[in-house]
Image (cartoon, rainbow over all chains, first blue to last red; front, top):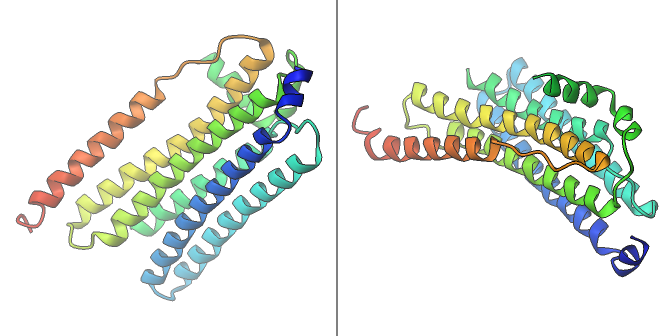
Length: 105
Length: 131
């Protein structure tokens, strides 16, 4: 394991970091669609709340990604993903979907 | 089912996962994490598809549009929740030195996506005439 770790010093954390970036990008696209949806609904009180909530979900996801990416850079060997972060990322994703369902009706 | 409940408890008491077995090679954990992220991206793509159906197909009847969007959004939510569950199960299996868990979910998801795609084709081909 130590020889394997010596042979592969940086690529695995790098690939994981890029995977987080890709995921953040996907989340941004969905958040923009959510933003567009609530613009469509007009500047009602419900529309403003919807924009705020989707922004919150997006920021939550960004925060999780940022914590993970910076956390992975400092530790060596990098620590495994904590379940709390995984759960938060999934919760932000679900929140965007719930928002979409709410604006459907 | 009890395995599912135990897995669910692990979601909310995450420290417990570290009590079992040995810490695996970090590369395996990172690979598991990337798989988790790939599933999250799949979920985000499905949710984005739900938004897109609602926003970019305004000619469709409301019922059809809402049905398609709801199907995609529900698939996205399932996908996100299942991503966490599968990640926890894989992490635990690696710590215990067991085989990785098998899953019917990819087959199920591909069936749902195929059904939605066929429905889209039918709707696009015949939907406007019925209006």
